[in-house]
Amino acid sequence: AQSVAQPEDQVNVAEGNPLTVKCTYSVSGNPYLFWYVQYPNRGLQFLLKYITGDNLVKGSYGFEAEFNKSQTSFHLKKPSALVSDSALYFCAVRDGSSNTGKLIFGQGTTLQVKP
Amino acid sequence: DVKVTQSSRYLVKRTGEKVFLECVQDMDHENMFWYRQDPGLGLRLIYFSYDVKMKEKGDIPEGYSVSREKKERFSLILESASTNQTSMYLCASAKGGSVTEAFFGQGTRLTVV
Image (cartoon, rainbow over all chains, first blue to last red; front, side):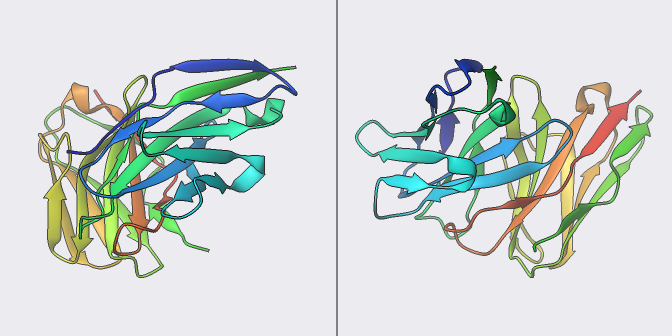
């Protein structure tokens, strides 16, 4: 069975500092990993994904994520946080060996960036 | 741009009513999903469909059913609404296979009284 864990309910960081939002996953086949962001009263927006290749993937708004197969992790990072990055972030996984493409999400992490 | 449209932003229904939540996508995607979002629980998959008339249960299918008679439309049905089904419901669609990202609708805030 697939699962995703986001161990932190909330991450607080000062503007200009680097940020990390953690994600670990479990999947029987090849992991296809995604990060989404949700701003208040809005739907989820896609940020980036890892399918194969370079373990460091870059996405929208200056975000990047590092895939670590041995630690089954896919942490979201940004070198310098902005107040406008404050939002709810979700990690998700699909099983690459599955024909049906079931997509499972973590419980979400609230990022609070303070001026 | 991909558009995923949910028929209502807000709904209020009475306990025991049969409730239909509709979702339409305009990009010919094979996969469609229904999630509910609750604080602290994240997005939980209710059902998904990988083709017309094909469906698979997610993690919390109890009390729900789905219908996919046409490729662009995926309906979530609450057979007899209960107060514990008060939640935000999110629909998503994606191309077939597993490598592509899903696109989400704006959500339907359902309140069962």
